[in-house]
Image (cartoon, rainbow, N blue to C red; front, top):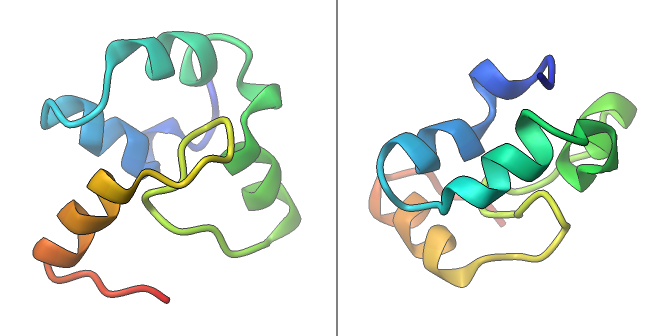
Length: 73
């Protein structure tokens, strides 16, 4: 399992029913080294909470983040 899983927003989005289980299975509990979020975290590079493990930006999750009061970019 990815060492960042417990603090990753993907975990929270999944638990809240906003993210499909496939992301968790494929990346967080699977090939986490191929996760773009993991790679950027390891390099200390900023990445928004709504960026998926494959590097795409999910506008639906961005709206969720803004709705919850977290403002980025």
